[in-house]
Image (tube, rainbow, N blue to C red; front, side):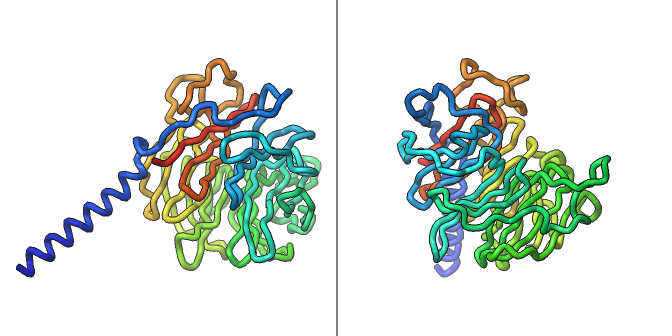
Length: 328
């Protein structure tokens, strides 16, 4: 009798685990076509080479390269609400964090060479210039000058900032919550051997927390400690991972060559969404709206969860496109 009880408990545990994984299969997500409702007079979202994030009240923030509407806000129903005043038009990667003293937008300017902390209303709280980063961690031009091209960031629970210089050195630069520079790690040499360390996230699924990062051209996602130790490859042979975020037990990865994946803590893909295998449609920003197909991504460049686990994907697309996949 005791043995039967043990066997029953083991079977129930197995079924529970299987059920959890099943809820993250592609079949358990529903495409929401034409979800975004643009404001009157705006026929297209805008030239998109940016990111997407969801605030604590469920509003969706989308960045585009438009000086007049660089960071746009949409409601839970997809309706345009407002543009964030004073937001830059080169937020290639940004995050929203709710903290003890308020909720804030954090992001590096790709062309501007600064890292910003803004209120949700667009008021500047901190502005960190790239000049505080030591030159040894920057790329040198032919003219002997240094340059940065910062592509993404995240904020740790203790308030530290981690910013990646993905289009230049592939170093990660760490700052404390006051904006003080602390250290840099990563780069293109061993043991990291990064190609394009495109976007990163603080991986709160582990204790202590880690950095999880998209090494895009190496087709892999990797882990580093917050002090910079290379911990290993999380997942490989992806379709050029470009964006990543973490919620609960899962990491969401946007792959610029035509797919979105959900990874568990072991790095196993438990869901694949939006897979596009049509030649010429992926990995570029030129596919026009007439050729868009609901549920098929072209060049995922930003990813986000809302509190319910629904998935939002912003594309690399000169017309501007956002996908929504609702978790059932």
